[in-house]
Image 1 (tube, rainbow, N blue to C red):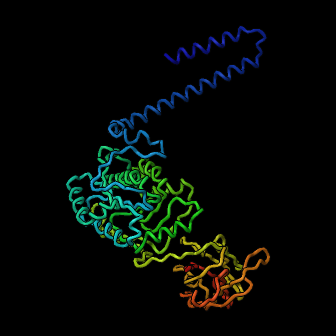
Image 2 (tube, rainbow, N blue to C red):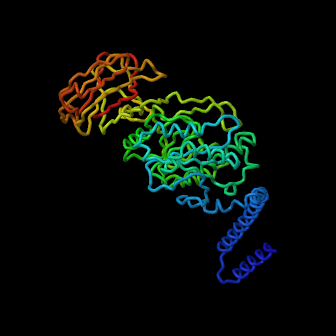
Image 3 (tube, helix red, strand yellow):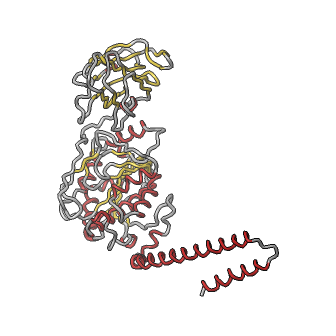
Length: 478
């Protein structure tokens, strides 16, 4: 009927236009073209409408099943705001002030093993008294089994009562009614249904945890519930963040496993929570975290070594299957991140592609790579201000390229700065020592050098056929 009246209306217009005086053939042809275009659009529209109807038919079952969850997702487009969830506080003393770092853990009942208590214990035991003042730990008991939750809350409150009273530890739960549909989801990557359900729920578990933690601290680090921590990990994290001041970053990684040790600005947590909810059934959480980082324009991974967190669980939370993954970059004792004060780096070596000099001085897992150096080639570090150095450590080569080391070299330090060919460098140097097996390390430098150091120089003392990788230059100041 609609189509009939539409056609009738168009012909009436054409009839009126025919009655107009001085109608030209060209104008009539123009009207005819407009008419044909309109008809084409109408036909295409009808196909689109039919497609929409088909889509509605295909998704109607899912929509009916998820009607009771609509209050969770109605504000999904507001990425800057938190999600409206009423959490249950299972064990908590509300925070009196905002902390520096929140450590978030989500835990569910496992078929084999339980590592949550050991993980919480490691967080607190590996932190000093001063560090404890700057952290809060939020545990999301995400299992829908209330009996299991009650047992876990009892164990946690018995073992960590003083941390709960001090506001350092909170145990929460997001009720089941806030969760989206978890059955009949898309089987991406040909995963079995139970696997899809498990990982999809896990995404929502973490989304609700992130949402809760959005205003508890300046930074947030994500852990799993089967993790061991490095000694004084907070001090190490603070030093890394300070070294990146003025640099744009979304995610800093302190472990190479899954979503262990992923650090975020707290102001990004609402967006990340919404993101996990939007794509909860699409892929595993660690894959989504990678996409989130890329969408916020951090192209490359920023990962620090040694790792601060180690996976210690033997059985996975999924079906209790064996999970022996270990981070071989983890160091438990006294993770001492270098200070590496601000500096400019120069070299006259032939640099390969984009492996420039600055990458050897970065805390990130990257390096300088140059073509075979010749005798007399140098790699110079010029500090913004003179510094008192306590310790120096330089490593060359990598596990994959163990022969790309500095086979013959020495390390010098300089005091007085001059300007030569628009490059700031020192005019005189004092030799500290020689490289051995591609490495240089010296402690108590400040007791051996009578002046504040303005420059540091790596010298090639013999031409070599092999390329050169300077993997890391680490400097500790006093």
